[in-house]
Image (cartoon, rainbow, N blue to C red):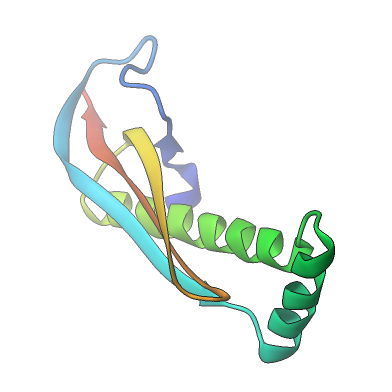
Length: 107
């Protein structure tokens, strides 16, 4: 059911009127294993994209959005508007991603 919740970065959903329910969020902290951290450290010396960290952030983003959707479903929402991301590095190789927005119910 959560994957059916519309999530948009816009304030308005064309063709829909809605009422605001509440703020919603999804949060995750992800890390890669020690071998990938060492490989990423060596790659940083040469420069270029560090695919292990790109993969880490992509996975964390997907988990955060899924948790945002689950939070919206639990509140009875039909959609989430004004979705945004926030991120922070806790330590090398450990990232926190928050997806947040406003849960709404269609009229």
